Structure formats: C-alpha cells, structure tokens
Figure 1 (cartoon, rainbow, N blue to C red):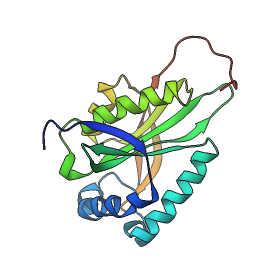
Figure 2: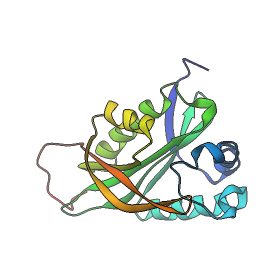
Figure 3: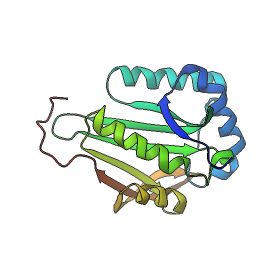
Length: 183
C-alpha cells in the first residue's frame, strides 16, 4: 500500500511470528544475498530466542535491534550491531523489508530514522554497512542516505555454499569534535 507511514521501534519478543512469516515467504528470493541459516531461524521459537539474545546485547549497549513498521504493520527488520565505543563510536547497520512492503520507500525512510537514532540517542559518530555486489536495491537505499562505498571485502559471506565478496559502505553521522568514551 503506497503512502503508508514508516517508523522504527525496538523489537519485541512478540514480533517473532510476524518476522518469521516474512522470512518464510521471502526465503527463496532473499537467497541471493542472505547467508544460509539453520532451520530454527525460520520458526517462531527460534526467532524468539534470537530476539531475546539481541535484547540482551541491547541492554549491554552493544546493539540496537529494531523493526520497521508500515503504518501499524510490521514490514521488516533494522539493526545497529557491533557498536564500538571509545575512540571509534561506530555501529554496523543492517536491514531488510518484507516483499509485501518493498519498493514503497520504507527501507530508505527507516534507515534515515535509524541514522538519527544512531547519532542522537546512541551517540555514534559513524555508520557502516555491507552489501552483496548484486544487491542494487540496497546500494540505492544506502546512497540515498549519504553512504559511500569505500571498498570490497574478499570472501566475507557464505551464501548458497559459496564464499562471496561484499561491498563496504560508510557514513559519518556527526562531524563536531567529541570526547571519546563519554557517551
């Protein structure tokens, strides 16, 4: 449905079933750029366990695991992982949108909101991301939010039993000088 609002919020354990429904429906299409997963990844119980682990990392300040909403409907997943403090103040962005909500601007708007959250709430200076060479739609989303591609990693993702290279992206969130470790 075009014209729906987009928002992000922290994931809840109760989101597991809606997330898994998207993953099961889109499993074949996402196989081109998603790593192979254990079978329990595609079950509500397995996803509840995964969410609980992510929420533990969130409570420790190492991650911000969220969902993307299209109106009131859960449309996808968005995260900041690998948060580093001290002189780095960086986090790695990841996201996907279920096929029922793709090509409507939700990824672009959700990423824009996440970047604000990363700078304002998490106090991070830089955002990083990586994509498959073939994931042109994701490249466009990142570019629309000011990311620039700065390199390629060799054999960094195991997809479909084959080691693949990926593109690495970055965006500076805050340019003013900050005292590292104070956030």
